[in-house]
Image 1 (cartoon, one colour):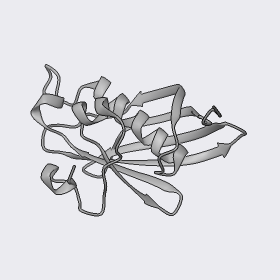
Image 2: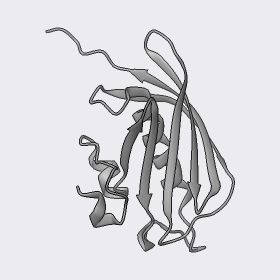
Image 3: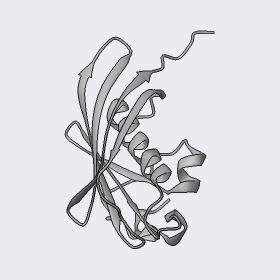
Length: 139
């Protein structure tokens, strides 16, 4: 998927591997040093009956950002253990939502991450979570 097709800056890229995220998004990312920067452009189908972005979609985007931060944008598989969200302000169709995910701590297989989502320079959601890094099993 090309970010330009969704009016997202061209320095972002698509993470291949999750059909659900593609269907509800699509979402895009770039790594800036060790910080995950994520983006998606809000369309009408992302909005609820109040004409603002549906909270479930914002939580899914926050989870995407948590996971990209945990795996550093690489193809290493991860799963979410916890995802806690606080809604701060609404966003609307046409808005570009930007996420920023930073690792607080890495353990053996668990990664603790914080996320902030913004739209039009305003924080709209904060999130924290624990992500488990999956190790491939030997045959």
